[in-house]
Image 1: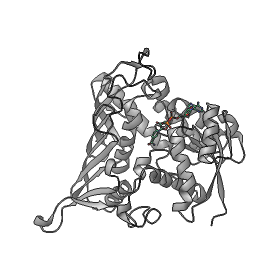
Image 2: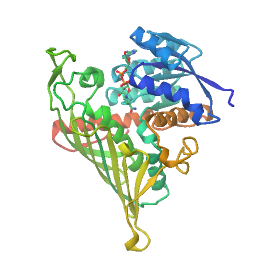
Image 3: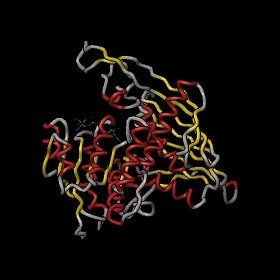
Image 4: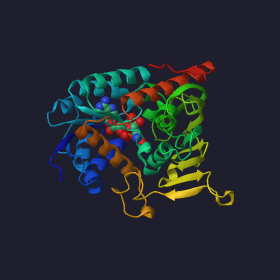
Length: 380
Ligand SMILES: NC(=O)c1ccc[n+]([C@@H]2O[C@H](COP(=O)([O-])OP(=O)(O)OC[C@H]3O[C@@H](n4cnc5c(N)ncnc54)[C@H](O)[C@@H]3O)[C@@H](O)[C@H]2O)c1
């Protein structure tokens, strides 16, 4: 039993509000003793009814439509921002000013300039800061990083990553905030491309330059799902493909699309090194493909490892590898790591600096698409 509690003030009662709330609510069922006990103190949403229903459903003690009031509460230790990107900067700066620890959903901000301000403010204030790139907390993905750290595949030659979905492929599907640049910042690139860029950096390190192809396939969509609804403009990218040069010398290729028929949440990667390869597909998220160039040549092959108690966080999750895990478990690991960082006063990754560096790459991919040329990243 841990007597220390951390009060959660969560802003945004939508998809991620539900995912983060489920993680706080079940963290102690998995991780015992947890670094501290979460206390679901207050839920804010600009839509008061969403905040009221969310508080009842997710287990928050109170609700409000005013996120400033939530931040001002002395019983809120962590401000958890689950709103669209256009509000991340303002809410995070206010929370940092109030001395709160901050968890912000990805992408960190609308662009790298905003992300930089958030990084610098959090660093100056000394508060813990984390970006919700939760796919990197899939145990199989953490195990891939562990294998690289152990030197299992040696020097890395190449990283190939993709994140493909198909929910936008129907041109009659209504416009959402994810199609509007002044709310989302960018389109497919910032929304899902940012996740696989984060994983590329986690595996292969900093990125020096990119060259890209960026396309929008549908310029306008119905405003609502009502038949005959007005068409309204879409002003973000739908698909991006880019090549990368990593600082350590390896090379990479990333593809992000919301226009890939038959792909629902197809995030994956292949890493090729001098002594082996690693492959991962989130749609089969408990498995990691590993090839090690060792032993008699006739016995070599790509083996499939089913992650379980022997793998990162496995002792906290389920006792049998084949039982499987899901998105909630990655969010449990995420909030648990944030709690641990607060209690033991250590850095937690990906922090706002990492979020800024991902935003820099998103900006560079957009610029390269316009310039038709390689774009170098600033080394600040
Ligand atoms: N880590 C992941 O895998 C993942 C998955 C989906 C979404 N996200 C990210 O999470 C964030 C939220 O996305 P979502 O899918 O939950 O969106 P959503 O539309 O489901 O929910 C957003 C909620 O925020 C509220 N809101 C909007 N602006 C607000 C403001 N200024 N103040 C208070 N409330 C406000 C809305 O009323 C809504 O209830 C985005 O940054 C998105 O990119 C991350």
